[in-house]
Image 1 (cartoon, rainbow, N blue to C red):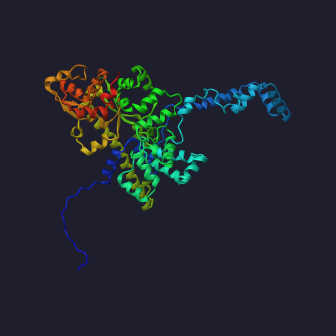
Image 2: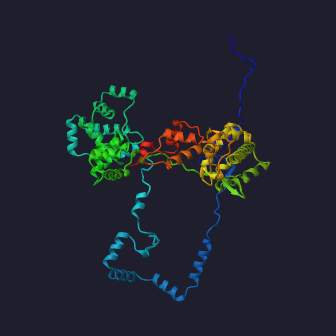
Image 3: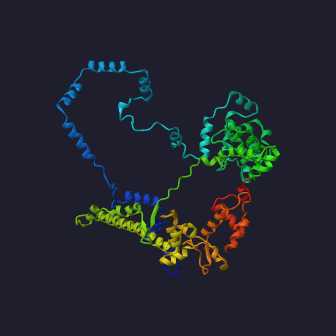
Length: 558
């Protein structure tokens, strides 16, 4: 076997991307927050890249006020200065006499105030004299230390702080369950909660392992969750474990369904109406279907009394688990803004975005070192490479903003009706339309529109929100479709954007008879009569996912 070196030729097709193009694409894809982090990391790693500190637009003239105070002190009378000197040179007996005088002239109320506050009003700046008294609502709204914890972590902390009674542990021991095993059982239930705080049964593949572990309490708990065993027929450890979990905060945690969730919250409320509790216990299906008349008839009460009792349920949360979430808040920072000037819409970079490009520059001190002929080869090469990387990074950042402005101008050109009339007049548009307009690749347009925001007269929008689908309308019904200028659309237009469809659905629902709300099929028929050929399933999708509107049976009112 020949293991020597050989020379050969081959032909293949491949695409290579230069480091500069890869860096530009990476910078272009980043959001504003990610870009700030990338700039900080690049500045820390590259000594030739500098980021100037922001200088406030207006600085308070603190020096003048200080000089003014010194002048006032210098211009004070000699008697005042003598008094100050005399006070400074006082003896301990003088200060003791002064303390005794304060105590003799202090009333009980003054003393209580001093002890409660810890300081007198004359002890500023230890106490803000201009601050208002503490508001209980403000104390309630203060950030909590466990705000960033997940639902399971929060419940684990509550389980750690939970202390059962001696009688309970005695009964558990008689049932063959130790305290540690009971806590593990509650822990298992905590891990079985979904994001809404409801108990969910384990998947089939996980049940195989549960059955193999042969833990009778865990198996029984799974059967209770699945509804195979009523909770009242469960053993003491399982029933108590579910009960303990349901006492944790927020109320409603550990329920197996929405009805049980409402019952947990209702029984924890003091003076909760018995009529409302009876409705949740015995007429929950009719309650969900808003069949108030049927509930009133079966309970031998008036419809008004039933409706009044049901209003007490409005303060309950159907998703208690979502009250505790570790999901980070999404902050929308607009990179650009669209403003109207002399009847035309122009795209401008926000001040925060423009400051980034102005603050980035190459360190002149290090760059000038390249002119030093006595500089050694390694140092010269390092500075030269660092300078090149800094210039490429600055070019990539500047290219990001210029590309975003170019794409946004093309969007404004195609969506002028939106900026003049509002979201209802958003026209159908795809990424390829803008790619052809600006002469860029489709992937570049996708990077620009994802995670980038623009400030418009109608709020902050993500760029990808301007790209919507549409449906064809019937030319004979064109006069029923509103236009951006307040009139109607021309008969030659054949495509209607989804935003207009959403607006039409919302108007139909807002103007419907609440006693006989429109079904999805009725809404689809009404849209078809307006020239919008929308299917019933499309109406249901828009109503649920986009408009967040309940079905007709839930919108019905007596």
